Amino acid sequence: MTIKNKIITFIVLVSLGIWLYIPSSTFKVYGDKNILKDIEIKIDGACDEEPMKSIFKNGKLTPFELKDCTLRYTIYVSYKNKYFGKNEKDHILFWEWDYINHIYIDKDKDKDGIYFSHFRRRSFLDQRDKYRSSRHYLKK
Image (cartoon, rainbow, N blue to C red):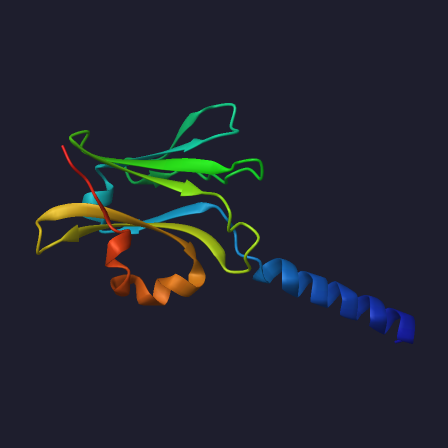
């Protein structure tokens, strides 16, 4: 193998490694399947042609990514169309290396309620229980 081929191979491998490392900003939803079957999640992004997009319904996720032109967006969550919650976010972290869009739906046994949390950085996932202030409870 010539030096030129080695350099090209090295550049391709490094580029591929960087591309594989960059996390996807596609929304993902996690939680108890018994709760998720009755959850609907909608995203309202500022620059989207369709102002409100349903990304999760009846336990099924429709792939969705925020566009680069989005400056602010709102996540709406409903449970059995009776309980509702929302969370507004600025879209400022999309250049971070550990940028993600994970939504966790959970039941709080102490308060007997359902809440959701939205995490935008992979580094926060390990400390989910620590971020109780990021819980958004669904209300009638």
